[in-house]
Image 1 (cartoon, rainbow, N blue to C red):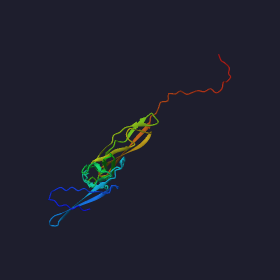
Image 2: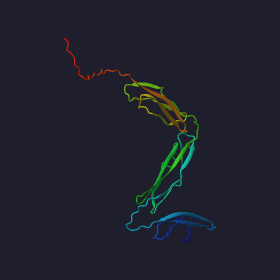
Image 3: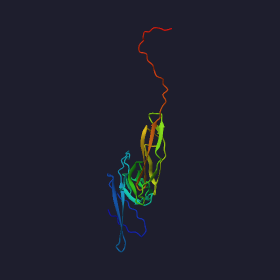
Length: 244
């Protein structure tokens, strides 16, 4: 109910309010102050009342009110900062720590999608967690895809009918920066079968453009000298006359 009080300006006021002890709930407290001219000042805050049973253990973690996912755009290849407010936490017995978010509000978020995880703790050590994402899209120049430098077509031979292991080097360059690759299929160090195999390599940049390069690996089977003599088989003994 109302608790009228008259005091001087700047003086702190202490109130004692009684709430029903049989329920755990969140109460809103509104305070009004009037001056001699009839002006009124108002402020509101929340009071959480928790029912504490003798011998009971609190196992309920804080509840975090999380934000919706955030989408941002930037012309900076390094990304952009994202400021988020409004992450709050409530608990049946009171939040003692948090909510704390990682990465923090105001951090530099790179191009792509980053998950922000927020936590809060209560006096019993219970921890509540919630998360949302910050997606940063690159909108600057950079319409050209990465340029891949691949080796010339490779030709090799082997005496192994199963093929041969071949290694190679592929590089990629881009006007705004390569973010993925180069990745080749089959990759360097693979076993290439006898015959011709096409190797396809790709790389992507921060703007989402993809460049491609290809080359072939041809493996031939070497001629192997035959060093095994013929195997003669006698099927029947034939009668004959010895000669001298």
